[in-house]
Image 1 (cartoon, rainbow over the protein chains, first blue to last red):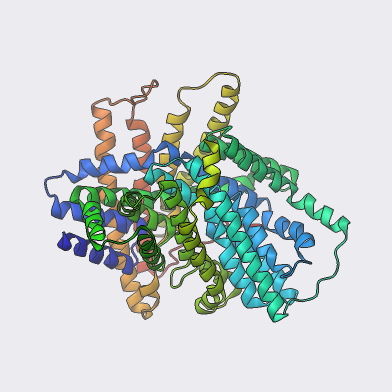
Image 2 (cartoon, chains in turn yellow, green; image 1 turned 180 degrees about the horizontal axis):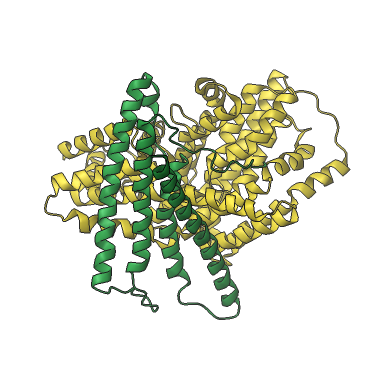
Length: 429
Length: 173
């Protein structure tokens, strides 16, 4: 077993370091493992079944549609509307317009399943505006990096859909379970920003805003707020399946772009092109991981790892701490989708055997993946902010350090108080 | 070589356009199902055809995703190398990817041809011939192989590999 594990790690590391695309690296590792250690398996026939099966699971149907919904809203100019709509409401709070990063990300996260997309859309408008108004640049970048990660935790979430498919858990339940942790995390970020600005006294003075300006702000964010309320309400009340909800979300996004006067056929096609490419990128990773996980199953790797971990005699909480460190480390080199599809067949049985709820673990893993978004050298939110500011990854990572700490602390709080995630879905039943 | 690269680009863009039609198409199918169910009706084919559309989208847009630099890879090591070594590593990675995708294409050919020869039908009430969606997925992955081959040609001849301005129209945020 040690030999197989060593070959797996070396092979996968060599392919990744050689800059072979991640989905293809996963596929090649699985293919070679089976060819070498299970030579009797007819690989052409076996892999064809795995590939086809991994491309058609029903719960995955919502994924391309939620991506499309987000792209349609981006094409409708949602980023600018978020800033103009929120700034009259948030400017006078301790921390001022820096809160736009958090509240804007929270709102965009509720119509988008992607962390990098959330960071890109909010940051493209907020970073130049905050700089022009004299806000602390480090805190602006750091809060955006941290808040952007909410894209994964607040439903709809691409990562949760993938977790639900791989772990065979209800995506609806996962979505509902993510709401309170997402909002709590947003509040923690806002508390840190307010505290930082109060202590350092670096918050620029903000001119008073009239109620007329605030009402105009509501007009800007009103349509999106209505869409979010519709999605969240339907999720909670179970009015439609998650996939149907995604389709309704696309329709809502198209209607919003018409209301905002930004609808055009060309913009829709552009949104469609972006959506299918992102879907294909995730699809290739899913295909590769499906074969690798089949190889793991055939070779008995999850069982062997579970036995090794069990032999350590860790308490359930210690196991979670070890897994958090493991995911944080893995997240330094891999993206969230790859981390989940690769590790879940091994980690989920361990965690459920330790008495944790699989839905709770889904939320925990999402928080762990969020951490990976802001840890160098591979942190997608850091890359997005780098492309917007031209700063080095090191500078942005240092700016994001307090938010990294908040995320780590929040993951541990989640382990101590699992009801943060489980209470709301519990009320559904 | 220019005409060959242009031809592959056009094929790739065509596959992507079909994927765009499919994504809006299955979205419309889902919406129709929601409306129908509100009137106590349901279409037996909604979920099944949506699944085929999703698989086709994953495959058909995979080549265009490569062409526009959307597929994820780790470039940590290659970025630390001098330009000549970086090019060499990229060529090796591209060749490895060609072999891996050829394995995927071969497997999907086996799947689609077996379904066709044995007239394998979906187990659902529609009893759709499975070779049709499987052939579309096969086409998509073959397109990915072509895009990889074109990428290799571009790399070896010092052309720009990724078409990052495919959506050149400014996105208003």
